[in-house]
Length: 344
Image 1: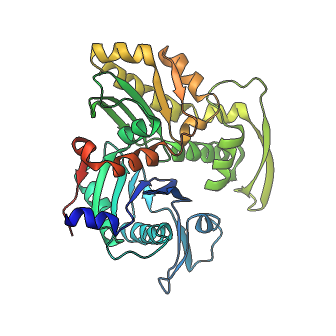
Image 2: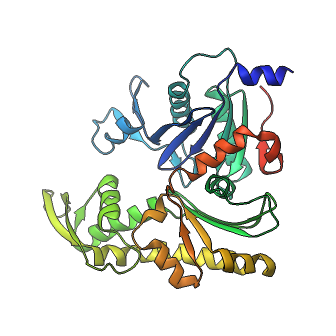
Image 3: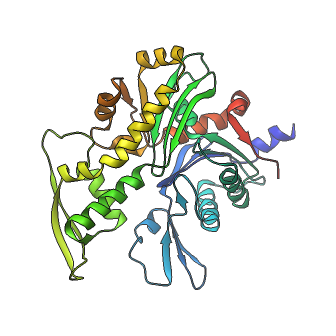
């Protein structure tokens, strides 16, 4: 009875706590927050300057006493205190009105997360205002968000390419049968672009420039018409700002290493899949979610490497949080796949 009353007196939420972006699903309202996982802090006063999109615009542009940081790295918490601040602010924004009872929160985490990292997520959420915290593996949340029949005795394969990690899982009967998690994702792609420009042109560019290059002319396969774009950075020899043009061909070559790691992980997951479930995957194909799936030609690239159908969902960025939201709405149905924290 107390549990039912608490449900009505609090606004429960689901969170996709990503390396690049944090999304929040409010029960009964849908997705209410979709912001970069960035916080700007004044080191002298410890005052929080900005959180989310405003903080991201400050990356690489702040004076010495202000730092704009991304507290999540490789899908897990790198800075506990800053993550707590970010969560508290996002939770506050998501709550349209004040409730007497703190919310229950479902948070998606990488399937390869360690016990220590899992505890850090739970502690951060509880300190940020959660009454109870439930953790769910990102591949399962993505599969549920897409609408795959995860409760059936048939194989569903999901590859979720996020900012910090790539999660690959075969799911059946509400559980993960085969699971591969590698700490390679969109951030790694940005980093190889930065290093390519640095080594080839002696030009230093920032993370946001590299991300923009990846999104505009980055590709996993040859384009019908190769593209070029201008980038701006600092010449490492003269120290003077400089503009140069780069092509989609060289960016694709730079992306070879992280893409090869993703393919290797996918092949390992397929090798570990039981034969009966593998037959289901041959028939149904692989569902691809996450921001990394939006790289041009990514689906064709994986199709060429595996000879399997690759299905990119309509909105790959929201699958995980939508799945977490569905779990939040029916916690009793998903008890087998969630990890529950102790009650505060």
